[in-house]
Length: 82
Image (cartoon, rainbow, N blue to C red; front, side):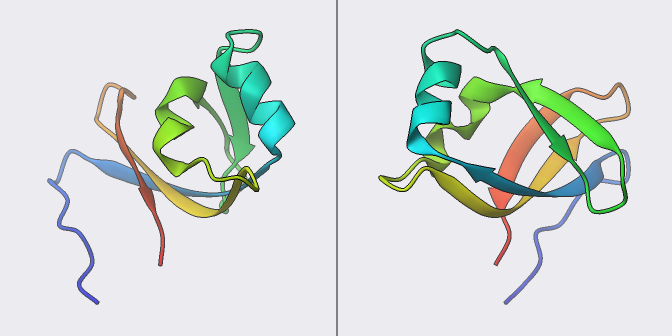
């Protein structure tokens, strides 16, 4: 499988997420606006929880995800890792 191409000013951060449906519902309803995760390299990252909505299933959200940010630390996109 081909890896997505990234521009040179983009940075990828890989995180493992396990969020129950109930926890995601809190995020979705705005009780919590940010998701917080520890990257594989140990960095703690915060990003808008609503950006996880495309990945929600009946079981919640679980798996490895690539956060792609620009040089100003703006989240560009989230991709599910294979």
